[in-house]
Length: 193
Length: 193
DNA sequence: AGAAACCGTTGACAAATGTCAACGGTTTTT
DNA sequence: AAAAACCGTTGACATTTGTCAACGGTTTCT
Image 1 (cartoon, rainbow over the protein chains, first blue to last red):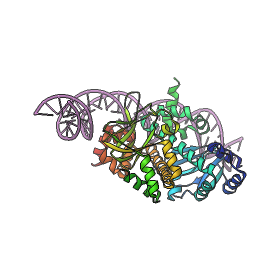
Image 2: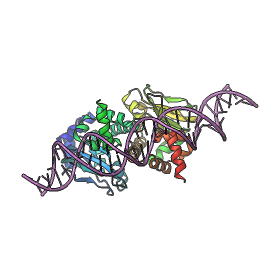
Image 3: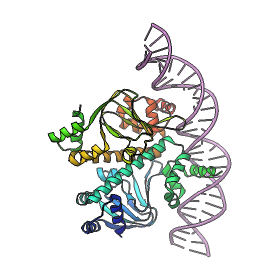
Image 4: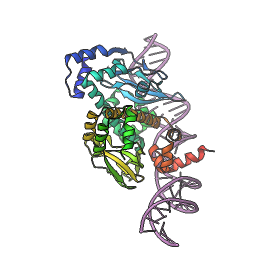
């Protein structure tokens, strides 16, 4: 089960992992299974674990005053589920993270992660690159959100995130884009005319 | 002129800098002055420098098909002006960065920065924390943008970014929030009734 | 197998936001 | 000192998007 994680790290860091390093990784990351709809993190709790998704799909969302959900992230295989603000500041999270499909994770605490980053250069490098990629993706998403109409946002998203479109229902995609499911439905059924 | 940067690094990293380290920093960061409206980065160019703002105010924005500007970041003293995607991927930038006020910067290339991070632990630590802070801020802004009405977004922004409100004209704030200047004007003049 | 929940769609209408034009009061430039 | 550019505001109107309700076709649960 850890094979996928080890492949991910060594590929990302572009550094091979020694067998000692691999053993340490296997010993540190704990497997965890979540059934569909089960919580990984609930609003108000501190996010203690980051989870590497080996198999499955998850979502991160907030719930507003009126009970409406707002999807802030969607995760599939090879993504990391985590509320960074909560886990680094040790503050209660504003978000929920739950399993959209039955999911297999490898979880790790922040302290363990910092320890591994000290002991395994490839791990530190992988985290750096992941941060980099994340920063870039956030920037793009933000820019698209404030600059484009709903229709363009959807087109951009669909062009770059085909996997998500196939994997999650439309109403989650709509929420991720900051629009309602009805609006997305109308956008899609006009775009093809 | 470098004193402010050195204070920033040591405070951020919570580590003192040796005098050798300070000397290296002074030798590496180049001072640069920009007049109001002068470009730091133009769309289509690769972003070669990151700039620490010692004094002044800047903005980062894209320009759409219709010639409209969309503000993606506002910067003042102690902020870093940089297009991360362009400078790390070495791709032409989608953005412009220019001086809103006469500005004094300390600039550094990416290669120099990587070198300093290797040689000066406090520098590496500062960058890590800055990345952390950035990731958290991006997450919050994104979440607010997709979840809240224009009015709530403005209120949240005003509550946490008083300095920006005082420093930049309303039409830039509006663009930063993803709304038009007219809408922001109306929001402000109803909110107080 | 039957009931329930889920999902995408559509219609009618409401609310939020954008567009365009104009204005007066600044500030900046010449 | 005059001219130009900039800035915030307002009105009238257009467009986009949201809200609510209903429907039929799934899929899921029991």
